[in-house]
Image (cartoon, rainbow, N blue to C red):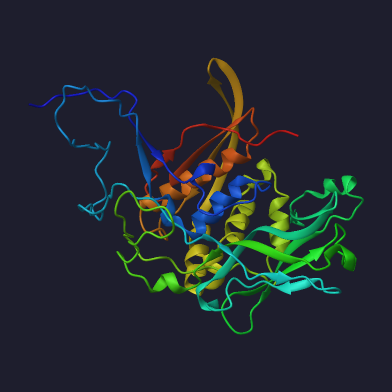
Length: 395
C-alpha cells in the first residue's frame, strides 16, 4: 500500500554557516563572517552538507520503517555529473582534530617573564598546541590562623578584561600565549608569559613560589594524515559511543598560520573595510586572498585560487526595497559576474555564492538586508539567494 503525505514545510537547509556549526573555536570579539570565510577557504568540504527540514511526525498507523526521499530538479543535471549510490551519505558531520589537554606544570621563578609551554615531554611528536584555554595556580593562604590552598585564575592579556585593574590596584597578572617559528620541526615553539596590564614584568613577590597549571586545546600534529578512510572508529574518553562510527574521507593536511608578519598590514586594512567598501571588486578579491591559507602553503593552490579570483569579472550593487512582514525595508542587491572556466563544476560556483550570501548578510546592519545573485558569463544562467537580514549591530 502506497500512501502520499504532503510536506508543505519541507526544505533543504545548508549547514556550516551558523555559529553553532563552527569547526574551530573562534574569539567572541571577532566578526563571525571571517570565521565562515576562513573555514570555506581552508576546509571547503565542511560546507558540503545539508539538513532535511520540515518532515513532520508521521501518522501512527504507518507500519513502514523506512521511506524514500525523491528530489526533483527544475532542469536536467549536467551530462558530466555522475550521481552514484555513495554520492550522498546519511548521518555524516565534519569533525576536527581538537581536544583538551593539560600542559606540563610550570614552576614560576623570580626574575623570569617567559616560560616554554610544552604539551608533553614524553611524547612531543603527538601534540601540537592550538590555543591556551585556561591558566591557574595554587596559592597558600592563611585565614584566621588556618592555612588553606586557594586557586588563582590568570586572565588572558588579549582578552579585553583590563577593567579588573581598577579593583585590584593594578597588580593583576595576565598570561600571554606567544609563538615562535620552530627551527627543528614544522610549526611553532610555544611560550607563555606572565605580564602586567602594560606588558611589563611583574614584581617578584607577585609570583613567588607558584606552580602554574595550563589547560590547552591541542591537535595531534601531522599524525592524522597517516589515517585512511575507516581508521577512525574507536571511541576514546569516558563517554562511550552510542553508535558505531568511522571516517569516510582522509583527514586533511594541517595548515599553520603565517607568523612572519607579511600579512599583518593586509589583514588590518581588511578589518578597516565596511559593508559598502566590501562591495567593491578589488576589496572583495583582496579579502578572499588574505584568508586563503592553503594558497600560502601550496603554490598549486595559490595558482588555482588566483584563477578563481580573476574569474570574478564584475560586481554590481544597487539599493532595493522589499517588504518584510508588511514593513518596507531598504537593502542592497549585489550581482557577481563569474566566468566558470577555472571552477570544477557549477556546484563550486554555487557553494561560493552561498558562502558570500551569508558573509555579506553578517556585514549588513540589523535594520537592513542583502540579496546576492551570480551570473554565469558563459551561459548567462543566474542564481539568486534568498534575502538575508543583516546581523551587524549599528554603533
